[in-house]
Image (cartoon, rainbow, N blue to C red; front, top):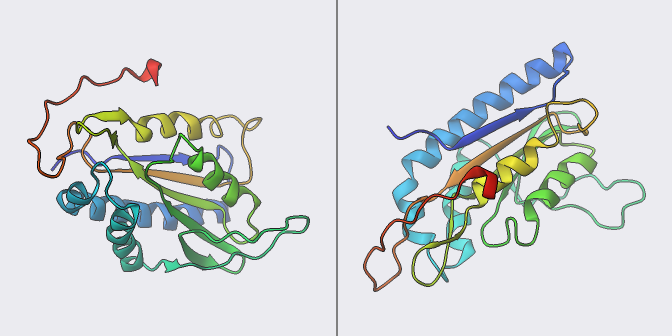
Length: 203
């Protein structure tokens, strides 16, 4: 079985209650990672250049629904904020506790959707964990990768963990990569030659 594309980030200092909660979240994250792996071929077929983002969200959404997430839940409004966050999916862990799950595609890093999703968890009263599902690669018209969001987002989110000075009110973040990282099938075209991997330091 191919290696699961899943990065786990957890705040450096946790109470006993928080550690127990993180254990529950970890188990759900492992289940989602396995589900994404089993549906990899199906996701590859819909994650191509100019395809609808809704097609990817539908497949991933089925998996999130399967482990208990609800869709289009409005979070409790925060004092001083004029908008009410509406994540893609929410899972309640208890009174005032929960997981926000977001599925991103083209604007993951180009529009900073990853950081907006992380901030959404930080300011939410009733969520302390993030499941962020992003492409391993996004494709250009030739079927070659124009960017590799999974690798870049892993670096960006890691900056908020590992040192209490940098950490915010997010207990854990789980990053999941979907889709092929080497080539994409462009409808009507042949499968292109796999590209050269981008070194981590260049991301």
